[in-house]
Length: 410
Image 1: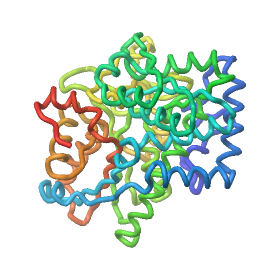
Image 2: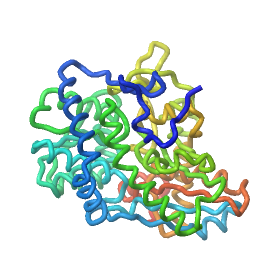
Image 3: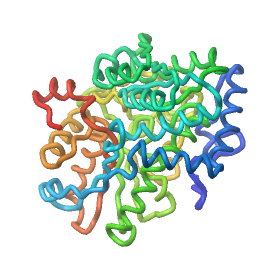
């Protein structure tokens, strides 16, 4: 049986070879990246234990990111559905409109400490790219963003913002032209330019050090939420459910981190189920996918019978990824988190319902999480509490929503 060690950060529960539960994660990297990965690992370990660096991080989280983000009760939605109380941690109120700003800010600070002037990153929904371009501009770094050609077309608002921030978008036209290829191309570029360039992986995927930096950064979400819950209720309520969308998995890990040792808090991750009545999806945990190697780490991966990465499909660019963070694989096999999925149609319906009844307008990523909340809330008691991480703003999905529904509400 897989066990999660209490009083130890989730990101540190790996063995000497960087494997979680001896089978997830690791560093499956080319020889040319061994030294850069080791150097970055050593630097991060020093910085995360450096009081001055922590002070600097906290300063920018407060004065640049805009922490803490709001914690609100969705009264109208709760009354409409009946059953459990539905609350939201509105992380989309952070600077730039999504949780990706935490990871981007920390990577920019690390880049400066490493003495490098160039920073690169991948993006799917465009938020990781937008936030990295913002952080690069803030800290005087030159930036390149690798993005699938399909995602460039469907996420125009964020692409416009990336360019306005002075970053260069590198279109990726191979394969499905989505996030998986963007990550691959970004890593290929870093192999050739790692002496002058720092790489920011946009989620909790890739070689171990990138998983750790991202999760360490987004943990700010649950640090805030822990205080906000105690301020609101006096203590952590029993049978509390924290629902989060899951693609690469960074927002979910950040949302859950502080509550890992509290078994009264239930974690529910919602993957992208893809179009209704389609065999295509981006939900490896929900659909019994096998372990494979993707972007330098062992994880559950959507693949065919020959072990090749299969095509995925989701209306949500940020969840359209065939793999999943090794941390989520670890949580699933340990039984600490439950995973399910929502279809494109369910996510759209959730967006419409939430934006109709409340003054928040979730992007299509957290709309998957809201879809799950909408399903289960009526079956629960009024004393029970659901909190959804509304981790992204819908502005980037404006064109998709108008095309699919005929209207847009923000």
